[in-house]
Length: 467
Image (spheres, rainbow, N blue to C red):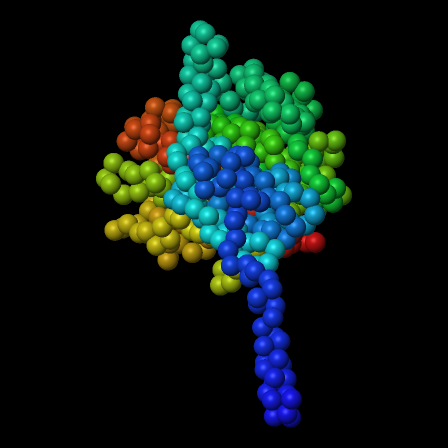
């Protein structure tokens, strides 16, 4: 063989050598999510998600992962996954998927261990949301209705503090039983400051849920007392449907939704008394030293408050204007800048996850609103931002350095029935144009508050401002 031929053959061998692997191995070009990922024990393309409900999923295979959009929530070991992405590291992952009632489509991205991805479109249908307006209305109707058959109506009305009141004690026992029945460690907290045990200064229902960490605490609450007879501005009430049986019932539904979840911090769900007499119930819990009071050796990270619920967007007034919707985070030391991280969650929940209209305005202005930003918010329906607004139990915890969110519906000129005999469930229905409209309004604000709590629990940057 001559030298030229040898050189030609060797050159050819060098050129084709790098290509040998291409012929010896089959290149992977597609991924099959169904081989590793199931929803409710069926392949994801065959699954049907009911909106607002939890659905089980399994994910197996080292390095395989799934990710979702912001309005499709993932839970693993009972806790929300804030990144919206889970990856298998060793054992199979067992988790849950939760959509909101406002989710319109579900697209889940599956990624295998080689980095190949496949979008999975999952069918979505109407469900029974974990908190929903129909359940809220049914519980409201039971609590506020008076009849001779206690299986049909509770008649838990006339719940005012300040004097011996068997009606308040009876209602508190009913609420305590609700939380205990869901598995919470529940206590009635009586504080007697004036020396007369027959007239407690405050009487609260406190339900506790243990968290993973023993260093922090967080909470949520609503006041269960109502304006006493003769109280300003409307002369007192007996149902207190809007202020604040509505918020009280929302807490009962949150307790049910949270029962199987696991939170990072010890969590209290509370029904306060004596809010109408100056926040004395929440102050008694926060500033007394008892086994089930606010722990003094743990960091109080955040608190969410529910007061006067239901008369807010998307409900409309008789003139066609939407009712205002108020949700204020705080504290707001400097109105020119964002002061607390929980404000980011407040904004994301309303406008990114629940898709509320950010800049919906009316031709005119609302009757009352926030302290710091009313000039630019007076005609804004979704009044959602940081503010110093007080007038409810969140102030107790804000004063202790906690980051807070305060949910509040219409008041004063926008809905003047509160603190009056006309503050009834029937009147609320009439004002918004029907039961279904009231249920829609309550369902939205309950989902907002519930998601705020779930997300804040998994946000380590939310700390007590004094920490």
